[in-house]
Length: 93
Image (cartoon, rainbow, N blue to C red; front, side):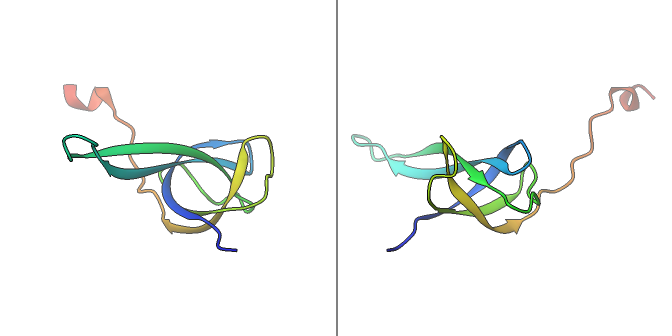
């Protein structure tokens, strides 16, 4: 049995071991042929709680873990880059 794997970006960390992963794909339009971007969100199990928002991860299909969670985080491909918060007072100096 081959298990389905997908690559996506974490958009939310809900709870201690659950992450929301957005997976994007390109599909051609039926009439015009132009490629259109589609995205779908999956709930995935992160056993070590090492993932953060913005990380690129690989998820694999598994048995149902909860009502909506049927994927596990297999590998973290790339950690998110740290973004400095915007300081509105810095521009007035």
